[in-house]
Image 1: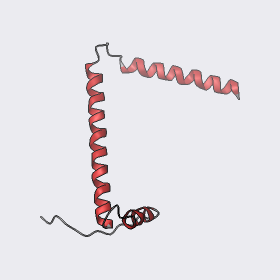
Image 2: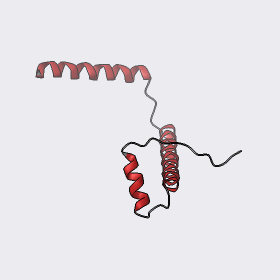
Image 3: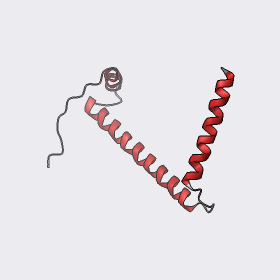
Image 4: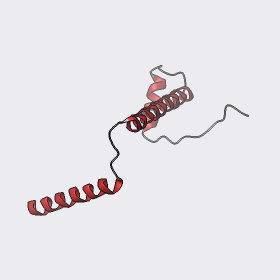
Amino acid sequence: MRTNRSITLTLGKQQQVLDAMVESGDYDSASEAVRAALRTLEREREALDEIMRLKVQEAMDDPRPSIPAAKVFAELREFHASRAKADKRGS
């Protein structure tokens, strides 16, 4: 399988950012800068995935009793209705 492949990017306003990165010497080429950006994006995605995994595990480990979905939605409808009434009175 081929590991390198040329692609065409349309960057719009981001072209100026890319050009400035190369011109400043931070990166030797546009390709190097784009690869660095993709690595950063990949690390960010992995970090967010880990945060979400931890949040889900935290919720699953929570010893408090579960709240039935019907009760949650009933409370949300009640809250929304009271806010809608308050908004109408304020108009």
